[in-house]
Length: 189
Image (cartoon, rainbow, N blue to C red; front, top):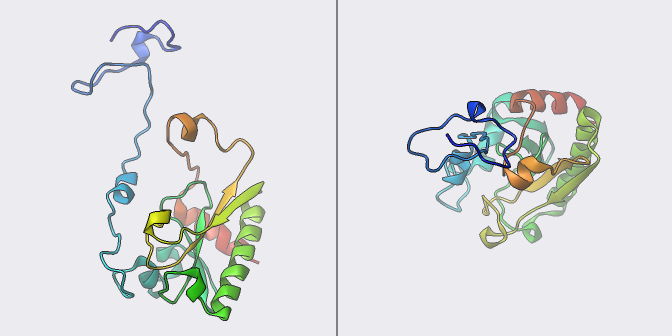
């Protein structure tokens, strides 16, 4: 491997891998579990309610297996399998509905209540400085599962957008999802 003039690494620290192109000074963090999301694994092939929809299927599983943090009357809170930040969860109505305007008053109220409670639990557990809260309505707006409405609650901290996501397009998550679920469930108001 050749030395790069601006590289903070010495050639001894760089390990080349045959067949991957021209060696460079970049370190790589591999996240092969993300390929399931990128390739659409377990993504519903139909817009219909039922076992093909993960948001319809999850409430039938034990909370720990489904990563459900809390169950309300008309909606539930579940950790995101592909979180933007630690503690990223979603509030999902039990009913298979695609559009926010189709929610009943009871569903709107429960989604709102669970969102507020999620913020409180996340602050208790991790001291989040802020939140991004929202939902993508329709596939064209970026909804990964457009047929079943879900609201994202993404905790934010000062400095959480650092070189890892900005340059390396990598998120470092310090805790396994089952451990995060247990902490949030224990701290749910």
